[in-house]
Length: 222
Ligand SMILES: O=C(CO)[C@H](O)[C@H](O)COP(=O)(O)O
Image (cartoon, rainbow, N blue to C red; front, side, top):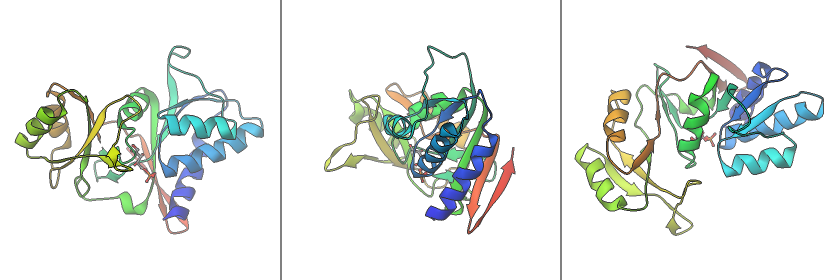
C-alpha cells in the first residue's frame, strides 16, 4: 500500500510546473509528494507551496519546499491531496488525519485539483468509513445530537487518550451514516447545523485522480 501511495504521489509531480503556487494536502500519501517536491526544488524547480496542515507545513520546511500564504497570492495553480475514499463520481470522503477544513480551503481554491491515492481508497459509494465532521468545541454535544437526527452515529475523535483538537482548535466527530448515496445533499444538510464548521465530503472538485495500483499508476480525469 505504501508503494502504491508513493507511486501515485511521485507521478503527481509531473503536473507541477515552474512558477506555480502549489496547494499541499495532508496525510501519508501527500508526504511522499512533498518529499519529492523538495528534491525537485533542490534541482532548481521554482514553486511556492501553501500547506493544508501544520504537519505538512513542518515537513515542507524540513525538505526545503518554499512556502507562501493566502495573504501573498491571488490563486493556487494546482492542489495535490490524498483521500480516504473516492466514489465513481469522483466524490471524496476526507479528514482521516483531521485536516479537512484547511484541506478544503486549499483544494477548492485551486485551478486544478489532483487526488493521489492507493487503490484501497476506491469505493462504489462513500460511507464505508465514518464521515469526519469538524465542529466547534462549544456545544459539541448538542451538535452531535443534531447530526444523529440526520442519521449519523457519532463518536468524538480521541487521540492519545485525549479529545483530538484540529489545527483550527475544533473537535472532530466521526459519523457513521452507512452508504452515502447522495453526498452533496448530506453535506448541505450538515452544513446547515450551527456549530458544524465543515464536513469531509468533497464534491465537484476533483480534476484528476492518480491511483497507485501495485507497481503502476492509473490516471482518471473528470
Ligand atoms: O484527508 C486527509 C487528512 O485529513 C488525508 O488526505 C487522508 O486521510 C488520506 O491520508 P493518507 O494519504 O495517509 O491515506
